[in-house]
Image (cartoon, rainbow, N blue to C red; front, side, top):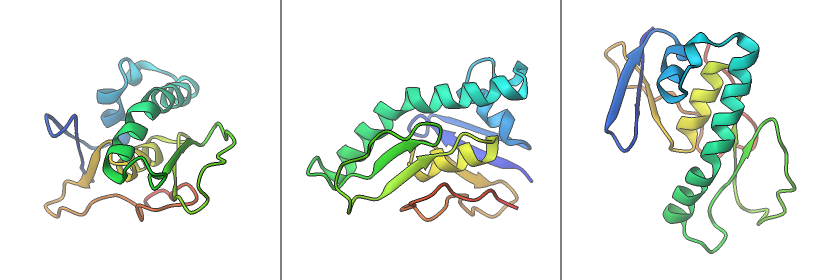
Length: 134
């Protein structure tokens, strides 16, 4: 199955057979890391992306508290904001789930490259990390 990832406002577009190959485009040096270091790299990327993702969501939803909360799955800060606000999780436990969670918050567009443009994104309002694709 070929995956296609589009990011950077549509300026970057790449296809690959494996999720790790797509992450190597987002995270410098990712392809040469051990599995343990890859998890740490995904967590670092997620934490480094939070400000940009949150700013984009506030711009889209407004600053009146309607913007979703975004959390990294390895850290659970006290999210004492508006309880009616949806929660998005950046899931860093494996390559595919991390790509799916980046797509769910709008940081990338992820699709199957088999001739059908089916987006690989869970329901955009999630209260728990999305399940992996089987």
